[in-house]
Length: 471
Image (tube, rainbow, N blue to C red):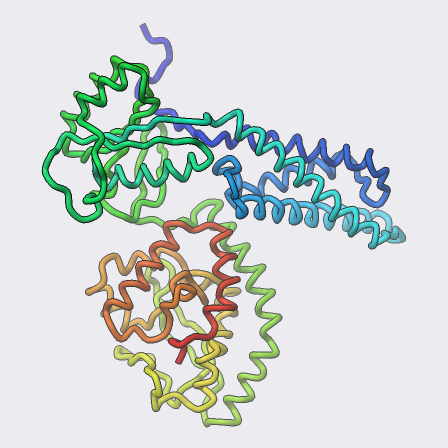
């Protein structure tokens, strides 16, 4: 008899209570607005109900972008609290800007008391933050168990990975995690210091006795028969059993899971900038690119005049680089050398390179030679943040000797990037330096978020513009 059920469908379970947290935040912001207005009898901050609803909705959307709903507040989680406050301020500013624009359109003679307005904005935002933060702390006490006993079957790379993630997830809890392993031979490398608490037989007895809450089976995928056998045996207990797929045996560049109907696929070589990711990234580039271009115009003028006065030749030059999906693009730079190389052989600049002009050395040291690339960003061929583009000749060389080198071209090249703020900029005179730079480029692609981009931009002002490798 067909009951209309699809037995092959796998439900994606999210244990972070994201929908609940979003609903609570939406209700809390509206409630906090009403309470604040009643408590203060504020006239400067007394807005229509629709405006308050809009503010709450914008906050939830911003919170999703900045990943504040990926878990409950954890102990001493300053980052999560800071991002929540930042999203609240941004939501208030966006909402009030829209409200003020609409009011002025329909009533050009309207006047706003700016002092009362700013005071109301700050105090109301802090009040809403206090309400949200307090509720989040209360929820974390009731929704997450205070203590939990976890067993990991298999001392493997997947086992170590799930242990690290579990300790992070349950950082506020009294969590006990133990490894169990049937293999008795000595372990080396990353497994050498991991102690086994017993065999699978002993673990099964503990599970039946109710002394284990959760079991994570982290065995290699080739051990399918053993895994099936363990699943049958542990079904005779009441513990929660989870399989940890040994995906790292295929690739370390897994970025996401994708659903096509009821079929789950694993994305390995893909870009994070698809669908809403592409829109967010482009909006970020347009907003930051426009702002930074305007701010840097005086510096560009200074650089142009300096180049003209100190050496013959054009102020700007274009060089071929690989862009998105490995397609060739032209990037703009201030000329810092007596030559403009753009051929099949391009020699990287070295310390005290005779090709670099005196003023050009200053431009390169301070990264001012890169400023024209803001126009590449506005044009859409580059991003503010992304892997730094290499000369075509260098790409053709390193794609042959560096593993996964071309994956960095799954995203647009950037003016600054994770590798640059980590200290890997300038000359790559050894293969090891290039490999480390590529490692950070791939880590950026794998873990991209709007917050990470803003963090890299911020750090660039302290680490990326100048440094010992800038020449």
